[in-house]
Length: 154
Image (cartoon, rainbow, N blue to C red):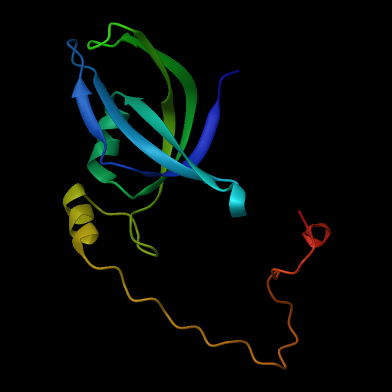
């Protein structure tokens, strides 16, 4: 079975090209963070989306938008024109996608690409100030930095 599901943010606007037979191929790349602390790193995936779904994807999604994808891993092979060497890379061939957010935190998805471009051009809202918890707060709080790994319920 070859199935890969992930959530990431687009690193560039999607681009749709057409085969000589007129079939649409939409290309985009996503970035996702894995690990935590000193072991945190970012992985980049090149993605391909075929047909009308790709054309729809291009209409509504821009660089910075977060998407969930269901895909299969494929290997592309080609000959480098400059060096004549055989090249290979792994790509995700997307079967399905879910638009999770646009580039701005807390905003809904754009109604169109023009709306998305207008939203992207706007300045992000100023961060909210949160009042610190009082000393007599007896409710359970978030897991703190000093918590032991065995205390985490999952």
